[in-house]
Length: 148
Figure 1 (cartoon, one colour):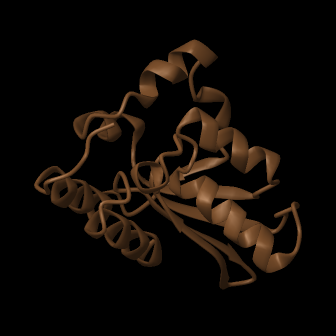
Figure 2: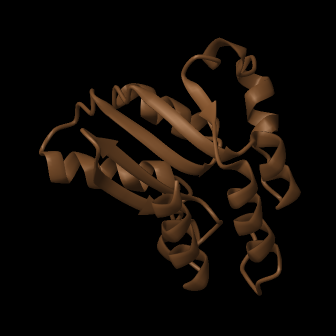
């Protein structure tokens, strides 16, 4: 998770987007990295998870990320959750929860309600290092930044 937090810090320091960093691990090695670049790229789909999935696919020369685990600073939004499933990622570990994302102005829970909630993913999504990721969110709240 520390590598995902570092990715997020890099992104928010350069004002690329929200405090969402991500790494993808296979066989104990980081094979993909990414952070939110929504503002930098003017791309509403360039979330940390999507960026890391793209990076891992290029590095592994495969669209199939079976055998990989994903670590992200914030619980994936519905789009990113679906991208993880499409990529065949084995497990997702996240820091801050969907409810925590609300604290910094994101509306992921609204979309979850449209799709029926997260209960079906209880074995797939695992919360870890929440306090460290909440500290990242606090740093983001205290920065001058572009809201989206």
